[in-house]
Amino acid sequence: MASNVDDITITYEEEGVEIIKQTDKRILSRGAWATILFKYQQWERARGVYGADRYTIRRYRKRNGEYMQQSKFNISSREQAEKIIDALLDWTRKQS
Image 1 (cartoon, rainbow, N blue to C red):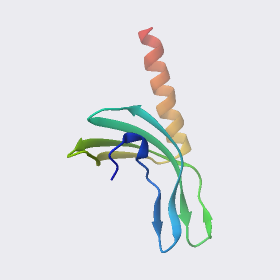
Image 2: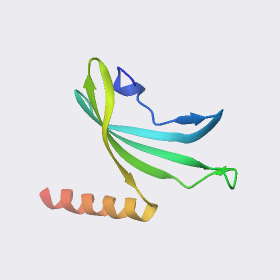
Image 3: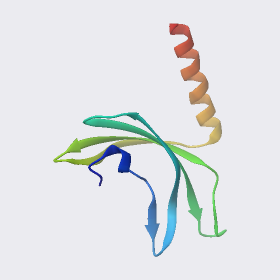
Image 4: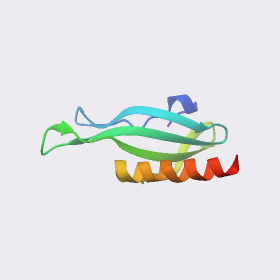
């Protein structure tokens, strides 16, 4: 794992093929507990191409100088991502 939150990645390679290709990330919180939103694509072996954009939110805890993943939530589709965005925008606008 990484000792600096900026160095955390979900990129994953297997037998020389990048299975999980991280295309963006946003650090939502830093410190002993870090929260990161990742945008990524997954390699589709059968088709030989990367699939549609996917999203995941992951929480990391720093112990003994290293960040270790504690939990994750995978957003299953673009539609679900848009529903999450709509709900958060609605809730935050009502607080203003």
